Image (cartoon, rainbow, N blue to C red; front, side, top):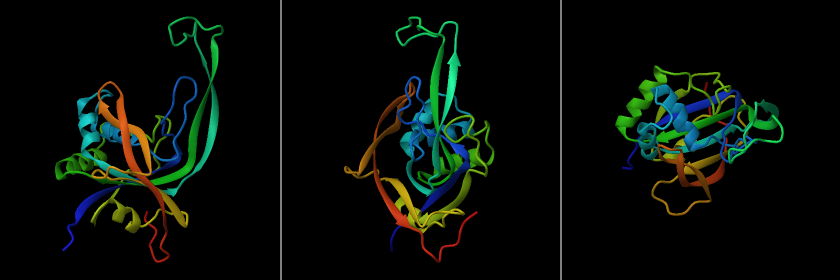
Length: 224
């Protein structure tokens, strides 16, 4: 008989989301999918862990994730200004002006279903934190608040790929849903993402993931 495991299911849904992947200096980008580091940060808020905590590193190295874009959302850019007296350059010098334009990218009306595979001990810690969060959680940036509870469900599946194919989609999900699935035992992948936390001083390594799409089954019930 095929071994089954318990997979945690999170739902990341809200008016705005922003998952920085290559955000540097003035431009603050957003990936089209939640980053693993962003998910770890969200869980860290629920646990009450400060940035730089060793617990976050241990959490990142203890979970594997799959992310399905039930609704990918529409990207837009908000042009913000930053002022200072004076503003500094990267090397500590003074800028020629005291105002800079800082574009911030967001996803509107997106909904992602996240599947987490981890040990029973970490599962319980995650569940307890999400049910009784110590700090406010947000979807990538602090101004991106979720519109529903983060913890959606628990399900039995052989692996993450089966879970993302079988779990019911969100309301208004598209017929074709893209996904990214992490394979911890694989040495190959369709892409590599630089979002796997390995150090307390914001150190990351590349993470192998398979990217593809899955068709929504007509008989699947829409989940809450």
